[in-house]
Amino acid sequence: MTCEISNNGSAHIFADSDFVQHLASALQSSTNDQIASDLRDERHFGTPKRGYRDAAVLIPITIRPSPGLLLTVRPTTMRDHAGQVAFPGGKIDADDKDAIAAALREAEEELGIPPQCVTIIGTGEQYFTASGFAITPVVGLVPANMHITPNPAEVADWFEIPFSTVIAPDSLTRRTTKWQGKERGYYDLEWQGYRIWGITAGILANLARQYHDVTK
Image (cartoon, rainbow, N blue to C red; front, side, top):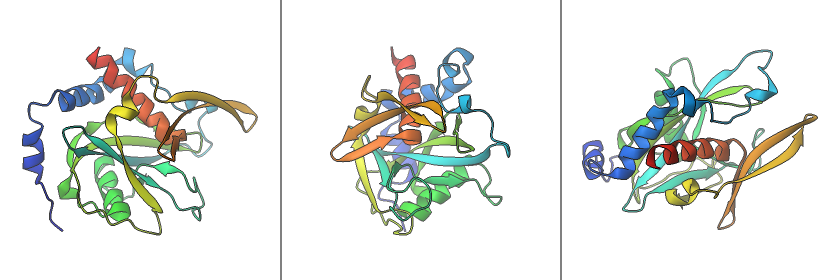
């Protein structure tokens, strides 16, 4: 499969884009201790007995004047997080060179996005989950209106939401619930019949916080 817009074309289109420059700066800010300390995940539940397993997700941002974000809906038959909105991604396998390679592989397996069609902007701070995963968010640009071929074993549906919606201040609502006898905080966003919450919303909340830190 070929891309509608090459990697070089993608980079050129956004060469002078404040949006991408700010996004890249936001990801680089993960190394800033002051900013990183404000990022939220589920480490407060304690380290799992077997430790954390490395995983990676791709945050695919579509190349448009008003960029979008591609998300998937997991089948209701899946063992974990059935029916939930998610990024394409999964465990980092032994054959994967790094988190970026794993995220690209998973995006190809789940949505049919060829790795050569993705222009990587950077990686975010790892998100540690109560279920025992250390997830590296990988942010990349993909051509708008590219042909998506969802794998029905892993993807029941997919959609594109305006990126400005998910990073808008206060768009993600902070809620709490009880889980394994402890109070568990999570983020929640309803959009056109889709509910984005849990780990996916948590990763987006951290990205939004970093993005606004570098643009204010």
